[in-house]
Image (spheres, helix red, strand yellow):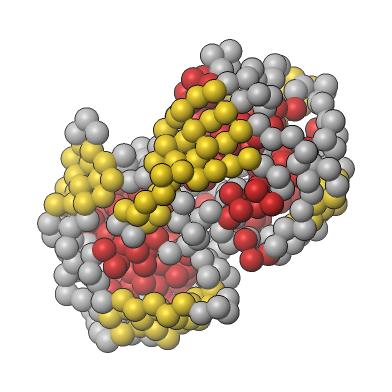
Length: 439
């Protein structure tokens, strides 16, 4: 039986301090890099979502030892050479990050490994990763989508690779493969999240990064025989925070302090965009940890929100947050334009289409193409309709966008597939209950 959530009242005013779970991108990268070390890696505040659990199951299947304690996870990995006895199948679940990055880890595996995923992940393009990984010498089946089979090479060769999409997943998969190669791999990468680069630096992996004012960075990674353990206290996920930031902005007489959040410059586009639209957001207690920039985020209810012609330079830095940014545009004065967002339709669901559907159901005029959306804002918008959200491929961000819309614009909502939040943010509703026990 499908579980669903009913919301028929707007959220009350609140003034709270909250913590959110560990960053998903960092959690998955920690798991995979821990597999490649022969020593004990330790993580505190590891996100225990379905995506991260899938990553843990994959590394265990590859021979890593995983232990849990009250507030930490330990992994003793297998080192750079992963030898398996028989053909193996690994399930990436719903995680594109896991499914793509683990192919880089498997570049020198000695047996055939099949990567499978759920229905949503199986629709996503994996050829963008398998194409550059073939250059290292690995062999793949020719399918664009999952399942993908890889047969590694004993001696991966270094490559030159140009990443044009701004995909941190593609870049990171190549970087992980480069670790096992002979020589130095050079990557010309369109600017995107740099979590993998920062982890490499902390682990003292030979990496050099030449940043340019242009849209590309140049990254060199030299192959190594071993890496050290990764001890990490994972900061809060700004993608998870974004839902509570927008909730606070659109609620009356409310304030929220979010503690210990990763504000990596490649992830903080949501804050920059919302501030341009008039949102009251402050970054407090800024510091650095393992190369990552961390802060507490203070948010207040915000009136007089204004429309935006969103600078496309922020697109890759806010790609997972645009759904809730669109809710701010719906409440803003004027017409907002968002362009070059085709990547949104390469996620768990065609998110640009779903954004349009939800806005239409709320009575918000919008014009959508396959890579853009124009939103006609209405500062006085109040929803008084019955709205049902269903058949959205269990996309966790569509679910959470719908919840925030229901709590701030009103109406009577039935939002199906409640379990979808387990993919990235299992405690989403628990935190909402702390803000308003009525939910």
